Image (tube, rainbow, N blue to C red):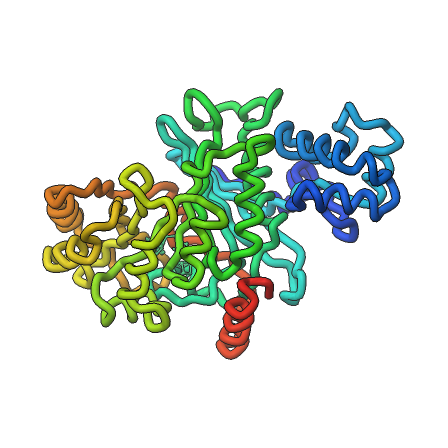
Length: 410
Ligand code: SAH
Ligand code: SF4
């Protein structure tokens, strides 16, 4: 059974639609210093109070999950009214929420165009498991890269998400799951029996996070701030297709766990599957992994490997994988290929996947096979794609060049 709520229907949409006032700047995604400065600049808080007020807001926004100044009770009524006049802390619009038979949830968010021509849509997925709940967050609308097995890569409208938009996915998921203090979890929702409903984050939704480095960094530093959202960096994983120049910085400046979308063990095949390999071939990618800050047996890199029938699933490929990763503290994550409308690839047979996994296990690696979740609502890895307008190839390439040049400030 799949449940789907079309929130574009009047009543439902009004109920969930944030009271967003797009003309008012958001306070979500600012550092404490920026928060203080914004209030001083607006003339509503004297300089000497800036730090204290910023701390109060931080607590309401990130510990209590309040999305309206009216709920910030230890701030005077007058200041709340002033804040509301100048700023917003509202959630974005949720267009649709789907709930899979296995409890996986997928939200379709709509964000303002911000230069992309028309409003854009992105997807976020929540995967409940026994002892944890993982939120799969998007970093871009679409993706400029074109991995041949990935649905997102066929979407042509691309723009970077802002810090607010990245964080809003986490805040809204926690709202909808009752994962803030004093909130109720919806009846019948499948969530971990104990602890936080969203206990882990993976940057594995739409987009290449390292092409939006600055925004992703800022959002993840806020998500892991101990006085706020307070997620451990050990429970945040950033997945990249292999943007080599940004890998070291990811460890140094963000300090989260790293996952690499490997998928092939020789350059010829990887060029076809993950075309960024032409720019940053395996040798450079593996060298960057070896140099990842903090790498140890307790802090391994995850190598993702999608199982494509008759393409990369032979025992020779498994041997190549072991050879390639020799000496790197690694976990290997085998992902059964998730098909999508129009793809030419097929998922490897189960027997083949098990043989591949056995070979890798025998070589001493943990190699969990990632169980596909939420397939009935197209929520599995690589299936995310919103129906946005197509962008011409030349525009995509130009945008990609800008993103690389500006570390994703485009
Ligand atoms: N752009 C980043 C993160 C998003 S993709 C990256 O490529 O790493 C998250 C993972 O899903 C990647 O390993 C990606 O290669 C994989 N993936 C993409 N399409 C898939 C599909 N159809 N089936 C299974 N895995 C897929
Ligand atoms: Fe982009 Fe990752 Fe999909 Fe490749 S696999 S097209 S990098 S989202």
